[in-house]
Length: 96
Image (cartoon, rainbow, N blue to C red; front, side, top):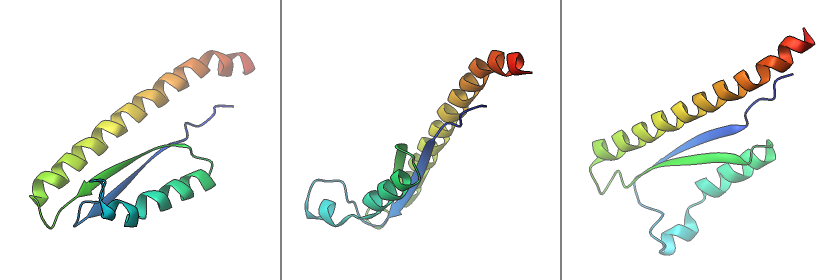
C-alpha cells in the first residue's frame, strides 16, 4: 500500500502584522490553532503561508507574494508525491 504524504499548507490573511516579535506576536492565535489542528490529525509537517498587513501595506503586492508562495509550495509537494509514488512502483508491481 502506498503511504500518503502527510504535508499540508495553511494560508492566513490579516490586516495587521503579527510576526514582528512585539506584543502582537503573543495575541496571534491562528498559527497556534492550525498547528494544534494539524497535529491532532497526525500531520506534523505543515507550512503556514502568511499574507499580513493588508490594511497598512500594498494589498495587491502582499496577496501576490502569498499566492506565489502557495504555488511554489504546491509544486514542491507535487514533486515529492511523484518521487514517492515512483519509489513505491517496484513494490506495487511485485505485489501484483
